[in-house]
Image (cartoon, rainbow, N blue to C red; front, side, top):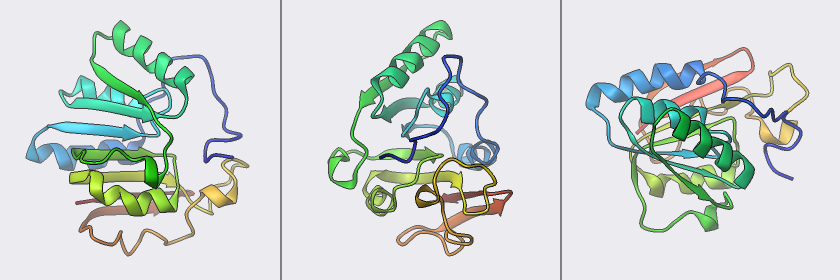
Length: 173
């Protein structure tokens, strides 16, 4: 079972980017743009937004179907996003890869999160569900506990933190 099990998947254009992602990205972009990876990207709404803004983007997901949808959306928008089908576990993260920005939205694997430090050369944006989320999905196993991110992540400096409405977001470097 994965953090995405039970979530609806529609055959349509990716939804709008997450509001916390946009707020955090505005802070990051004050220092310029560079390389970015959207981890567990799904159909790639954040990868596409990054590419629109001039980032050099990779998008990783286990689902080859979602990655194909992302490639098609990028082609229609005349954007370049490198995609990679990848088992998203701490042991499967590519060695010797670092990015100016790592984005993880609506995906939670605490072991992977702990290993994420080695990917981050600049900033990490994390936004996902908390135990206060009113919906049935994702299951409680794939939600943050209330206040879990408030202290930040080990090895990172918090730049922005929000938690409300069953969602939590963290920008750190």
